[in-house]
Amino acid sequence: MVGLLAYFDPGAGSLLVQALAGGAAGLLVFGKYLWDTYAAKFGWHRREELPTNVHACAAASSGEIPVVR
Image 1 (cartoon, rainbow, N blue to C red):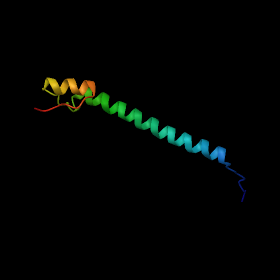
Image 2 (image 1 turned 45 degrees about the vertical axis):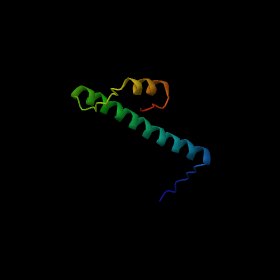
Image 3 (image 1 turned 135 degrees about the horizontal axis):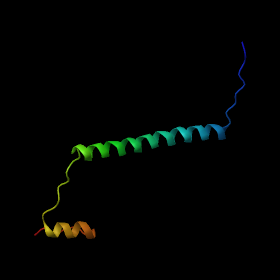
Image 4 (image 1 turned 180 degrees about the vertical axis):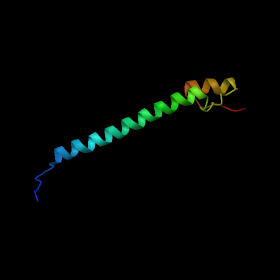
């Protein structure tokens, strides 16, 4: 039987962990891109409710809290 002499120092281990985490994050982003593309193509995306109150629209765009009277 042949013995395998392998050693992972902290730098190599850190590089391996970063490569795996980066690859996983890249796959998630690419998957979301594909999902959004197909959802838009087939009309699966959700429609957002738009505020009908003019004061609510102005407050939402300026960051102010709307006053209800």
